[in-house]
Length: 273
Image 1 (cartoon, rainbow, N blue to C red):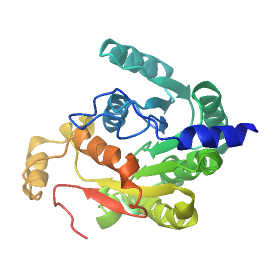
Image 2 (cartoon, rainbow, N blue to C red):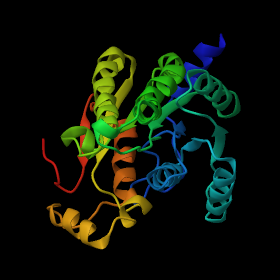
Image 3 (cartoon, rainbow, N blue to C red):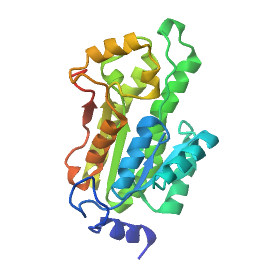
Image 4 (cartoon, rainbow, N blue to C red):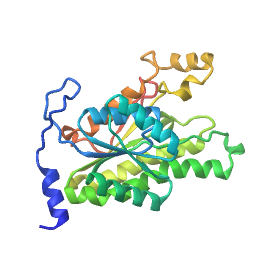
């Protein structure tokens, strides 16, 4: 039996796990190898932690060595083991190499969470080409780069989950964020197209679009501005990184295989499409 056929046989078996699933019955979902891009940020960290608690093997990309190592050590003290891979996700070749290394070290990647992203805000009349290019390559090209590198492995094993973390501002736009809104809207276009290509192969592709989430970026906004934003959110609060991680965990579950090409808005009712 060749290597690809063996991998497919192993990863299609109904594997059970003794990990307690946040109050759910045991043995519902097989443990998988997960790659989360940008896992050291606030939302990425909670996604990594949530998926690790569900028994998955979690790898994440990083660019800043010191920050990543400190993050890894801090979470190790909490009982988490995460696998770090240095990678500029805007670089196609770097993503090819990172995915290859993850597969060599951990096994076939069956879940991707495209979470990496940056902002370079400015009104269009003041936006430089560099600000436009940096956001589009980091936020949108990265989705192609990472997914393209891992997709063949998913096709070989007959199972896959691709989750693209977009934004409410990709749905409604935002003043001073033409670059960011374009990239985040493009992510969902990618989701819908790829979902149609791979649906018959056991692979689902979905988008999560968080609203305003309590991160350092939001907390740095002046209190008056934060209060104004919060007043527009029907549930009366900002989201949390855990809220986003919960949606990701739902979408990657084996039982969520009938959901593909969807955009799940996790925004407290702030924007309803």
